[in-house]
Image 1 (spheres, rainbow, N blue to C red):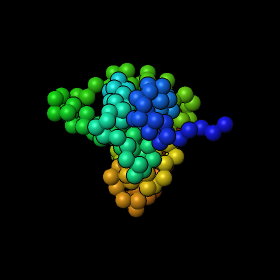
Image 2 (image 1 turned 60 degrees about the vertical axis):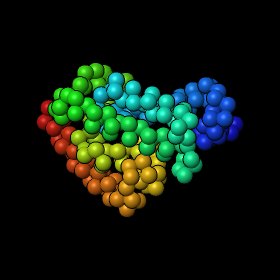
Image 3 (image 1 turned 120 degrees about the vertical axis):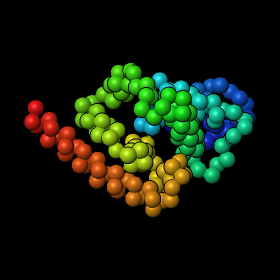
Length: 184
């Protein structure tokens, strides 16, 4: 069974405005996109709202997919831009240190089931944002360096360096976690 590509489904949606096509794309990308956004905004409710906003932007005729990258790369780029806009607005309204993170741990538990993945995810949350995003897109979303570069507005070399340095930092954080667990 051949699965239709996201690009074909999206093109058909734009042409016919069939909600089933948009629903198919939403089902394919909802969870991974929400988790990616959560890594930026660190609030699950906001991440879910931004994910819906990313799909609303994609669904609008104002900014259709142009085909210069994959649909998924384009969608993640939209989400990243919306998440960063949200952070700027939130910091302006509430101040830099008062972002609401209520309920994030519960949602995190739902999205990350296994104990080892939870430890990895916790360590990733301690990484600088660029390292975290590059590693997430490369290893959790299986994106190429070129796709990541487009989403993050970086060069391929910068993405390579971010992933390399991020993995080094992540290794150190995981070793610290392991050492702390052994002491308890």
